[in-house]
Amino acid sequence: MNSATPRTMLLVAAVAALTACSGKPEPEADAGAETSANEPAAAPTNRIDIPAAVRQNLGITFVKVEPRRVEAMLRTPGRFEFLPTARREYRTSLAGRVEILVNQFDAVEPGTPLYQIDSPAWRSLQRELTDAELAIQRLTSRRDSYGPLREAHHNHEQQLTRVIEIHDQRIAQLEALVTAGGGRLAELTEARGTAAAAQADLAEVLEKEAELEADEAETISGLAAARSSRELLLDVAATLTGLSTETLTEPVEATRGQLPRWRAR
Image 1 (cartoon, rainbow, N blue to C red):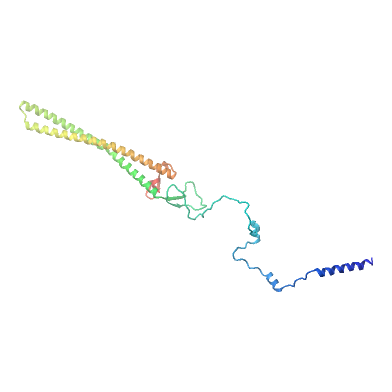
Image 2 (image 1 turned 30 degrees about the horizontal axis):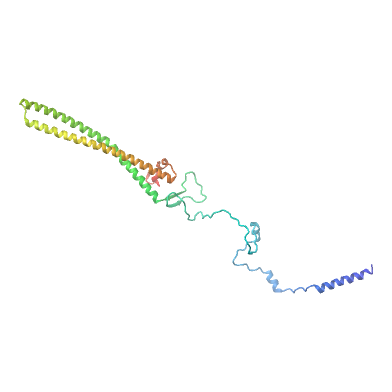
């Protein structure tokens, strides 16, 4: 026990000597280095600093950029969207200026107008429809006037017919008197002239009645054509707006009173 103690002490002393010979000298502490280590480093000016807590929450990691060959490519479908208030192009059935009547996230009810379009082509269609409506009204009034005109011509014809019958009877009496030698020839001649004038008036009335019937037939034909044109234009308007012809023709309240829907806007 006493002999092992000196050996142990020698071994410890040798190990300590070897360690002292092979160990590197510790560098002396630099006062300036301690000062710079304690001070925060200047942040780069070309990037935004993201705190560590935010990076951890968002799952953001950073790696050093290095050149290498791309082994895979990921394609993701998507699209770019404008801001709700930005100017954009809307595809409509007619070219024109679109005005949005609601804002994003506004609550709307069924039937609430979302937008309106001011189109020169729609104005032209409205003008054609208005012309067709006016033509229908004008031809309808003209057609309805033929009944009283025809009645007036018929009464005139009856009056002239009675006048001619009276003159024929007077002429027959005068001819009998002249033949018997008791009448005057001048009266007979005058009666014949009056009867001839009445017959000429009757012929003129009959001619006017024929013209009246032709005009009435032409008016009825024009009225049918105007109605067909109006129906065709309404079909075009229904195709452009997506509304039925019944909806387009129903009256709505406008600044100028009750107007059909196609004319109110």
